[in-house]
Length: 312
Image (cartoon, rainbow, N blue to C red; front, side):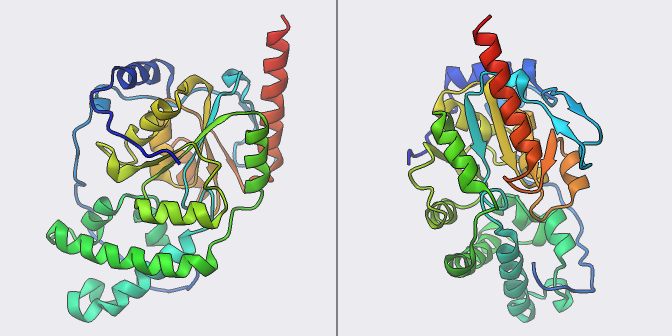
């Protein structure tokens, strides 16, 4: 797997930015709703800050959340690349993350006084933690703490996640079917994640996809993590793909916003997060998993469109 690299001065990334601007736009129930004041998240400077993109328009008929909804990828033909998030997109990892967060915060309640010992809820996890970069999570959970201190707690949480993932992590239904379809067509592919590299590489290995991805992009190794577009732009640059011929698969609002801001259509995978949250973030359409007929109908139509265009 190719390592990600520095790109802050790359002319080709600037070109991608301009192209994007032009083309875009568990499982433990609890009864207590955790409340936390929101704070301004740390802002990193980036060469990607010169534009605000809107979702790439694609033809969608009926209600995008309804059983009769249908999306078309024909505008992307010929399809060139697929970019995947990891947590919740390749695998249903959110229940493990939620459990690790809940247990660690409970164990530490006496020492840190977190939320008066009241456990976080799944709703709070989905809306405030899922898909976010650990530094940003620190500002949500511990707004008054020194970042180094809060990141130490995040490191402990990630270590717990990795111990649990070895035995509990499973792929999203239909994942390997889609991966074979991608390989058979020689499409470029990359994994783009806000997870720590150690977590990302472990999950990819457990899923048997170490040789599938050409590139792994980690949010903390970019100027800015998701929901900013930087990780996806870096992925496009690394595999030399155009945003106009690339599809993104994501399960979180944060990740969807990042893909949309990078100028690509994003398919929302409804593993755990609320459908309304994903659509509001800009998902082109939603699928339950990679066996969803909606997805395969769109992929088949895209192939047919590309073939007909090539013969005319």
